Every structure is written in C-alpha cells, then in structure tokens.
Length: 194
Image (cartoon, rainbow, N blue to C red; front, top):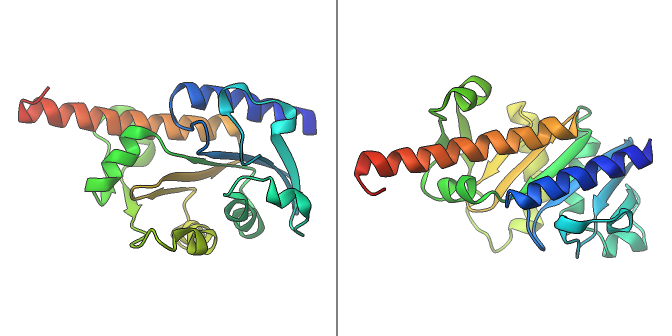
C-alpha cells in the first residue's frame, strides 16, 4: 500500500512539474497513510525527478524528520487532522491561476469544463504576506472546513486542494489553470491585445 502511494506521488509530481504547477523548490504533495501518518515531499525536492527517498513519512507527533520536510508540512497535517475526506493534498502555484488571483476576487470559468465543474470560486485574500506562514496552517483548514470545499485559491500564493484520489486532485488543478488561461486569452482578444 505504501509503495502504491509513493508511486502515485512520484507520477503526479512529474506531470505537475511539466505543467509548471509545482517547481524546483515550491509546491508540496502528500498522501495520508493512516489517521496520524502521511507521506510528504522533502523541503529540497525537485519534482521532475523525485525518488522514494524524496518523501518522508511523518507522524502527527513531531520528530527529527520534520526538519527535512516541506515547509507546508504543518498545513498538510492540520488538513489531515481536521478533514476526514482528505486522502491526498497538494499545494501548487500554477502561473495563470496565480496571476489571475492577483487582480480578481472570484474565478468564474467561461469554458464548458470549468463552468460545469466549478461554477465560481472565491479567491481568499491573506491580506499580509509578512506573517502568512504563521497563520496559514490554521486559516487554510478552517476555510476549507467552514466553506465545505476542497479547494482554496489564495491571492498571489496559489492553490491548496485535497481529494480522495490523487489523479482527481491533479485534474482539478489542471482544469482551473486551463480556465484561467482561457480567461486571460479571451480578455486579450476582447481588448484587442492578443
């Protein structure tokens, strides 16, 4: 079972790297093993060529391994502890989605697939980036829980999402990124800039 989880994480991380959703040192992927255990990438993981040892098995009780784990490990832990449906979690920074979030408060896809899957999604404004990492672990899981959503788009920061299936999780990010790309291009055509 654990080998299967690691293979999924490696496969999806390469695909997401190729799409520029996660990068050399930004982004995080994790998979829940049990209620208080999960795999997450190491802090220095390079996602286009991850190996099994680029992922750590963490427990909710922190030990020496947490120092090597992704900076997002606390955020993933809080989601797993508070949202039972979360089996896989991803933080990504897709360029069109992140850019769109800088100048809008809501994403309303105009393409068929985006509109059918999402309708509209509010963009969360963290206000101050100076202390965002001190607040993020609590604010992200609370937002998801309070809004009953598995997607949180954060202005200028990217997207957090969880799912019960790793490939559905990747598909969600790809659909949103494509919708934002289409919104960008269609706006350019309307304005005569493209």
